[in-house]
Length: 174
Image (cartoon, rainbow, N blue to C red; front, side):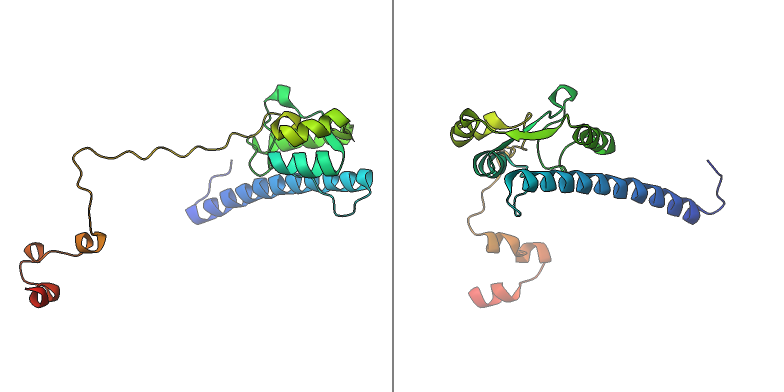
């Protein structure tokens, strides 16, 4: 790596490298989406059909309405099924998905009647892979001994004791 006399130039080079990596990742995701959407449109005859990445969206629009299922998702590689922007692993995972798609391993097939029935009653069961983990809300914990303010406006105002003199509010309320 070249030695730079100016940190500004070095920072610019590093950000350019990061932007190149980021734009390559965006390009890969866009290409996968475009190829899958076009194939789904061709197979269903519906020019408005598109791949859905949520559990309910995939079950409803791809399996039930489109009559297709996605086969060959790389679950053995630990790739969860979900919106490509949220799938962890970055560029290597997107390159894997693109390679699987272009080789025909990852593909749409006709959904059976059982697949469609299952999609109606249990959408998660028809996903091509393990769904992305959804973050759970952390439980709200209270601090023992903390006072629960009854009037948040009053508690937010500075008291005259803190200021060392009477406030305008105190003058009118006494």
